[in-house]
Image: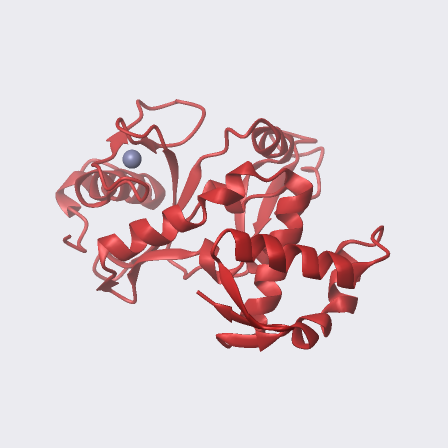
Length: 254
Ligand SMILES: [Zn+2]
């Protein structure tokens, strides 16, 4: 994997965003693999509504977002209702987030947010565009990536270091069980995974997770038995091999 864009491709383009688009798409096409099966990616023809790349072998779809900044707390995305509908229909693509170095047109970071980490809860509506705007009344969205647990931000390149392809593919496939969960339950699972991340340790206890009760109550105000819900999610995560129960009320991440 070569970390540099081919700058010859930018000749003839005037706007910086067009240059980046052409160079980054070509770079992904030549260097990035399907994180599910390891095959080479194929570029969709332009103007295809969903995704920018797909895998001809396993049919995964990928949308590429490029930015000169590292991944922050949110990603600015397109139309709000389109995004919600895609999540409801299950046809949202996986998101590649490519952070490039503007000084020498190289890749600093490349990560993927797998499609199974998207729930309606993390799609935040932006205010409608003003009457004076070209598309007055149009409503866009932000993706609240700060709510996504660490396992949903899979790095292929981290600070210019290439991560072992087999590790990336294995970590992607390990979490595919999330695709079988309905949006409501998946929201709970992801919230519990986020709480475990915040503890920042491999071994933890049930009481430690209970300390997030108020935080979880804010996210799920209709639920009156948060502790029972926590225990239920931990069991599901155990059943899918995300963690193991070591002793009564004690857990370890796998
Ligand atoms: Zn594939």
